[in-house]
Amino acid sequence: MYAIIETSGRQYRVEEGDTLYTLRQNGFNEGDEIAFDRVLLVRNDDGTQIGTPYLDGARVVGSVDEHVRGEKQLIVKFRPRKSYDRVRGHRQWFTKVTVQKIEY
Image 1 (cartoon, one colour):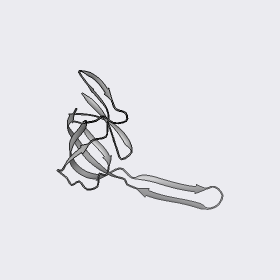
Image 2: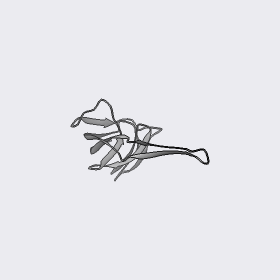
Image 3: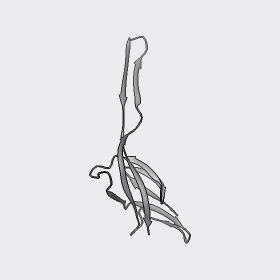
């Protein structure tokens, strides 16, 4: 059984027991339970249910493991023949979520 959920403008395919890295979920601390109610699709033994755009009564429940930062991404700006180059770094915050159950 798997589901496709939407959170923070991105879509994720999840199964029970999966570990998921989403964009930082503010308002949740480590160990808190988090529920995603924007479920787009659920696939189980009975078949596939597709929402328009979301399924009513479906949710994915998980627990917040930790808030972590991703790898450093370098942003390079360069102008040829102008003696201009600039290198900046950025590290994005992510929330590590373990999916416990899919309810539908």
